[in-house]
Image (cartoon, rainbow, N blue to C red; front, top):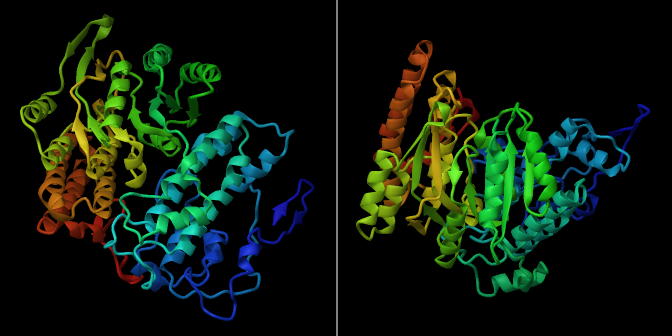
Length: 571
């Protein structure tokens, strides 16, 4: 049902009737017998779910700062349901084109004479919204194509470890049909970005080297889905993501330096800048810069400050680079050295590289002093460079480094495959990125060339989050809680590496961060702080003999608890 300008409404049939009509109404079915059911509308209110099935297979909506979450839940549900039935009569009338809905954006975009405010444009048509599509389709791909043949597929018992050709083909048909999202975008830059990323996703899931499949599987799938492997899009070498807040005094010089140093024959890059609620002239400077660099510069604006983590998350799904590097706008960088690092990582097939840094203390009246790394990091680097460390020794050392994201160069494939994002909290959001990215790395390297000069400002010059001493420090608990849950869910606490490296390091880190943050919490919150800290440490102690069991625990916002088997167990 869609409202008209005159106040009347029009009723139209569902857009997926061509798929709906092929589903039987007289017998049970599932995705193996009738894979076209996957192509029906993903809206959750169109299905009625058996609670036992949802709990048994832990079917949930995906989490993250993005749209199109219905797609992930739709595919996860149908991949888990062994017996489905169809009610072939209308029970619901869905209202479309209401402000706040995705369909409102697309219907407005259809009109050539629409006059849009900047607020409307940012809220409904930004790159951030189309970027929300990609994390969900990657989640679907990971479910259909698990990395090893012994992966325990959750859902229909008769499904093999890798999706049957008919189901996999339906997935690719779904990707192709998603072109409508790109066609509805208002600007050419947004349309082209969406189609390039969509093409990357299609090729990404048509021949994974680390997925065990029957002989001839990929060839058959490529032929059925009409994927031309020779037409794989050329990948950008480097994506840079940079959030900004009130940096008008030096943002233009930083971008000018970035372009001058990265530009070299045969090397390609793209820049994403997300202004996170600046109140100075930063956003205007960035818009002007974007107008002059439309081929590889993407400007986004949150409108209000949501924190650097969420700002970065808006751009991550859109990156086309083989590697991604995160820049803080108030630091200094050797971008020529960064380009060399990308070339080295590409040639040596590294999925993550750690890099040393220097620290510059910026005082009043431009009195600056420059030093090496922080002492704890300097000790780790010295120990690593004195020997030829094993993979586990490198990972143990990397996890112990400072959390700042500019210390590393990360493969975009690792980011997408492991679902790596920053935490949603304003402070401590780097924790999740640090642990998830290093935990997923299989071929990391310590690259001994300084890229970043981290600036620590005197409070009279510029405020920084590391010096915050207020109630925001209480977000250390959701930051740790959500990261711990994600690590356990990804299997980072399993096996020898998890038990001997990841979990002991995580436990040590958690204790250290809680001790550090406590001194920055207001006195009236310290009782609550101590209570939550004790709870978190008790959970770690309880699971210390078998840390892999943490995958069966959920974080409920202020506490951990085992995942309930029945709804009645939730208290």
